[in-house]
Amino acid sequence: MTTPATPAGESGAHPRFAEALEELGLGALHAEIRRFPDATRTAAEAAAAIGCELSQICKSLVFAVWGSPLLERSRDLGGGEPVLVLMDGASRVDVERLREELGAEKVTRAKPEVVRETTGYAIGGVPPFGHRTRTRVLADRALLDHETVWAAAGTPHTVFPMDPKSLIAHAGGTLVDVREQTP
Image 1 (cartoon, rainbow, N blue to C red):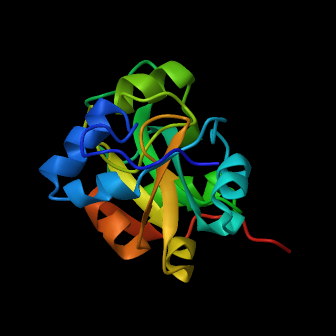
Image 2 (cartoon, one colour):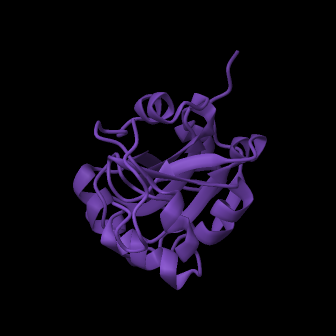
C-alpha cells in the first residue's frame, strides 16, 4: 500500500535525491514518488509493492573495479574504483562481462561502506542519479524493453517511475550488455 503523494520536497524521497530532482528540472517527479510502509529494498519487494513486473525495477548496483583504463583511478576507496550499474530487477550482472566491458583486471561487488561513501545512500535505496560523487554509470540494454521502469528514490521505502531512456540520460549512463545470459 502506498501513502498519498505529498507536496514537492516532502515526497518521502531522500533529501539529496529530492534536491537532485530539482537541479535536473524534474521537480514534477516528486508527485510520482511512492512511499511504502514496508521496505522495497529488493527488486522483488519493490515489484510486489508496485504491482509491476520484476524486470520493470531498475536496480542501482555499485561494483569495485581495478585496473580499468576507462576509469579515473582517483577514487580508489581502499577497494577499487566504484562503478554504478543499472540493471533490470529480473536479471543479474555478469561480472565477467562487466570486467570485459571496462577492460579491467578485476571487478567485485562494492562493500556497503563504499556504496554509501560513493552514492550517499544505503544499499536498497540507491537511486540511479543524485549521488554524492560523480561515478561512471553503465546501464544494461534490457532496461529499454519497458516503457516505464521504477527505481529507488534514495530510501528503502521510496520508488519513482521514469521512462528508461530518460532515466539513463539523467544518470549519465552508457548502454552496455552486461547481464547474465540464460542458457
